[in-house]
Image 1 (tube, rainbow, N blue to C red):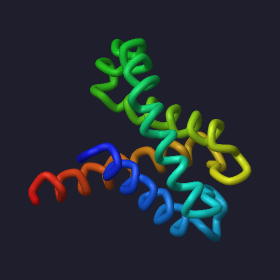
Image 2 (cartoon, one colour):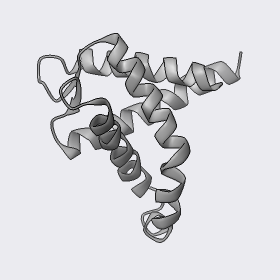
Image 3 (cartoon, helix red, strand yellow):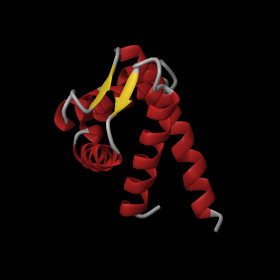
Image 4 (cartoon, one colour):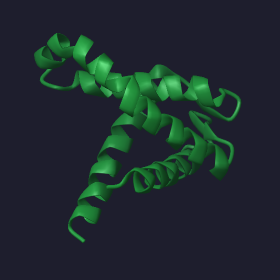
Length: 118
């Protein structure tokens, strides 16, 4: 997928997951514009910070057979929350951040597969 398609897809996923967890308060996105900004920040962090984190954590990623990458994705999402602003885009706990990171990975794989097959 192209850059802007990925940003829009992530924004839609943010809004959908925030709507799903609306009553629990575990994951909150206050508006569509915040979701779009957060997905833009996430894309920039994925391009700049994530490769460095993956390189540093390569031994533990190998030991866990790749499952540590979920923790790296959760750290990137937490950093996104800090940069966007915790008042409008936040997670209730790091466990919830890991859960959202896992769901986003699965949904992004499905969406990317759909666009590749078109």
